[in-house]
View 1 (cartoon, rainbow, N blue to C red):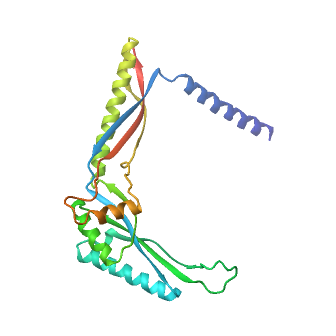
View 2 (spheres, rainbow, N blue to C red):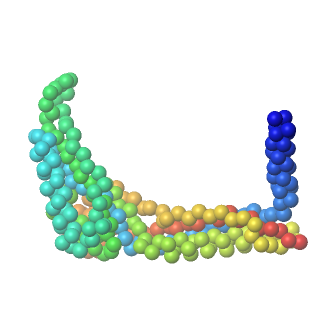
View 3 (cartoon, rainbow, N blue to C red):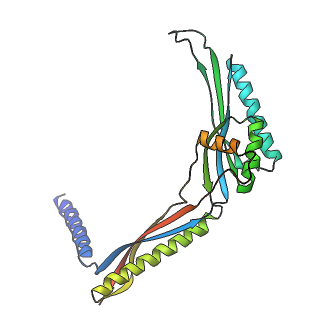
Length: 238
């Protein structure tokens, strides 16, 4: 038994010594961080909108909100929106007590809500859709987020810029010290999917309603920013 314990202890020590030896023989490295940024105009918009109703009974509220939600979905389909681009994201029915009487048995009314997420694949269709959605029953707009359809292409472009930036930094550092950059020893990368640009409830709704009779679009997509960060370790050569 003692021999087995000694053997296990020896193996553990051997493993620790090998790990220490590996750490001690690391080559000379230069560690840098590269940043790549790509700015593009969005070509899609994600809209969160819905309907809210108030009725005297729970069943009336439920039926009313379901009916309005069905009318909204029907309107979208008639105007060429694919079913896969419409998703119910939230729904609720709850009582409201206005009188303030503690322990009151019956509520004054019930509020029912349904929220849907809609992907509009063409920005120039947004205004027409919104005008019709208000008529179809939408009375809540909770957010707008701009998107880029071919985001992977711009992620690759940002990543390439980040790697180039890292190589330039490493070259500048080693040149100042009379050395040169060797092969890559290690690399880590992270890329975001495009910085969102939100536009919230009342602002989005009022801007669209106020612009209904005006010329030009009622929303401005601006730019979506895609960023990549790479951390690279290069071997230093003399």
